[in-house]
Length: 366
Ligand code: M6R
Image 1 (cartoon, helix red, strand yellow):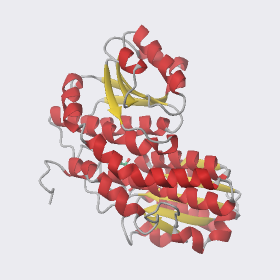
Image 2 (tube, helix red, strand yellow; image 1 turned 90 degrees about the vertical axis):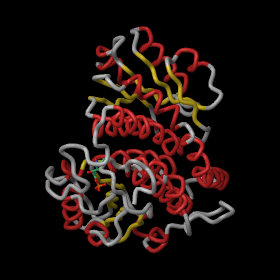
Image 3 (tube, helix red, strand yellow; image 1 turned 90 degrees about the horizontal axis):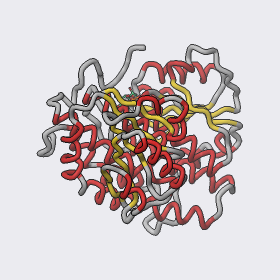
Image 4 (tube, protein in one colour; image 1 turned 120 degrees about the horizontal axis):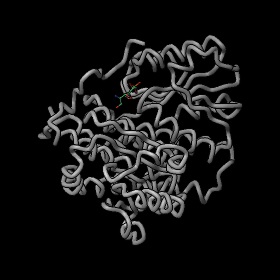
């Protein structure tokens, strides 16, 4: 049932191009000229009149939520807050009837996320769910929503569900922006066209598997890791660090790259591997200078760069070259090598990657 792979996690990482394709099927037309999420069309009034979105989730799904905030705010110009469900539910949060809650959960069974939904519902908010497990408790508790359709995820460390959630959030932001008129037709078309090409580009990233496996051997016995990214890549840094912690038990911190100088830079020495997401998009120049700051302190830089990059490959200790895409879709490309890096390091350490200690696939207790 592992399809010839040694672990479910690797199978699920490798499946991602097909999963993203399945997630988009019937929602994006072949010509790439339109995106239709039926839930958005059915509840258009509610969603278009929302004064604010509040995303509630836990763990990896919360990281997807951070990317969703960036997407929805950029394309739809609607304010979005992203909350840990466990904090939100106990804070007596301000919730109005014109708020829309977006609950994100792979399993659809996470107790804190479910409780956050019930609380928001009792205050009259409209609830949109983004889940994977069909017929689970969260889709049943929401007013509407979209399944991510990536198939069952068995590995405790979430991989394909994350990229599926980000894909749904992208389609949600695009559909809303089009209805709201906050995106130009040109921008809309170029993003949809690029989104259609993501599965093929992910396949290219997966070809780096053996190179990443080799790289992992160098860092198997590291005690700490820092992951840095800015903009759309900041949540990817958090996700990369979480993957490593969960399955290899190496302490890892994800940070927005520019925050480093406000504290974590003190940790950097020759023993500290720093993974930097430094693709051509976004604040490339700024990230480049963040890398120089790390090198000046002898940190070991593993950089994710765009194919053909010359500047960063000269300074970084190790480079992973990735196919180019547009800024807002970068997480769908940059997440994959970080999943592989965590996977191979954990395998080198001899850990049980599919069932790491102390963790359960669905957290049904608070
Ligand atoms: O099923 P959910 O998406 O609601 O689960 C949320 C978290 O428990 C989950 O993402 C957890 O952090 C994973 N182990 C991450 O790999």
